[in-house]
Image 1 (cartoon, rainbow, N blue to C red):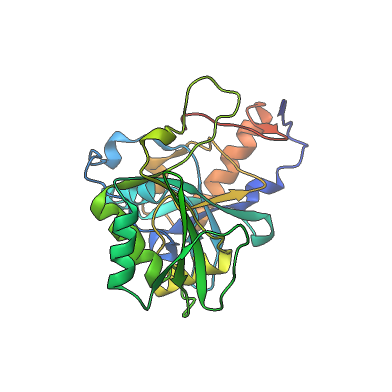
Image 2 (tube, rainbow, N blue to C red; image 1 turned 120 degrees about the vertical axis):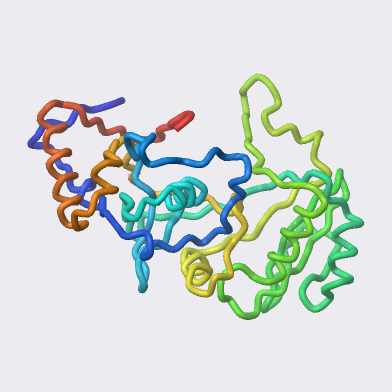
Length: 279
């Protein structure tokens, strides 16, 4: 249920919107390919609709989502970005189950033979075994279940072993997130088209920060970041973001914009689970 906020209601969450120089924003994921995207031109863009989700780090801000959109705007020449800065206690991470296309058991065996110090293959067991310095990645190759033990001794972001594995998957095919659709007509997951399903281990926000600092970045789409409060549709004018005024003046402009919208009853708050489609 949407609640229209009056001017007297609590707008403290909106104070977490910051305008930040692009050189202080650090992603934790590889940059997705922009080959299939049309080049953006700032003159053709009116607004940045949603602030980029981030959290503060020692050297700036860790970008938590939408690396592709961020890169496209950087390539277009934008220097200042609106961020929603979330505090760590309100951030949770979920690793994806990935459907692999074209990557087979034989490819995994070949990869482990090429990097025996990085990847060990075990037969799947019901009980998850833990081994110091290794991460467990489970595979289901059309009913044949195996576990890959990936070396993770340095803990400086994405392990080299996971990087080798991902690049091998992309060399032979591709991966995509599996979307569950219980109770929905149709087979959204298209599980029958996968050569394997890969289940990733859990990572922490510290792992993401280490990845950004060390430049050992995670593959895109492996880790989903969720925050307890998300601000959307700020519609920050590109003309303001792109001009030469200091960031403090741009933040003051946003506060005035929020005040105007609050007095016009154009701000809504939703409690509970909210699904925003096609944003």
